[in-house]
Length: 87
Image (cartoon, rainbow, N blue to C red; front, side, top):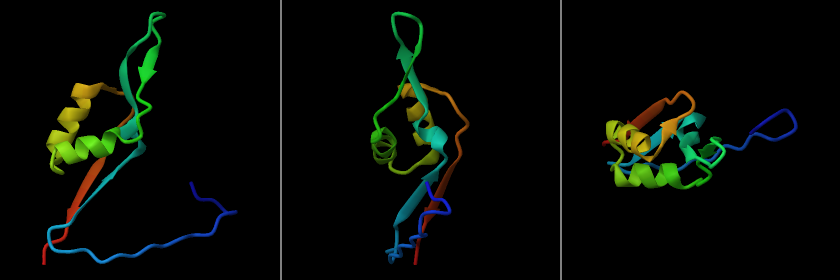
């Protein structure tokens, strides 16, 4: 996370026709994937899970949401935005 003590870094890159950017709130990673023997929630720790789901869902937001729900229970709110560049 940024802050007053860190410089702002801006990266730029050229999009090609058909490129898609998926943006999601931090709730995308907050999945309860089960409970342990004491009844405590097991929270997803796989930082690549969201990327895997996006790839498997071909960037379709409804499918991403459905697949996340199949992998676990959302513990936080979730907002997703899909931006596609077509020239």
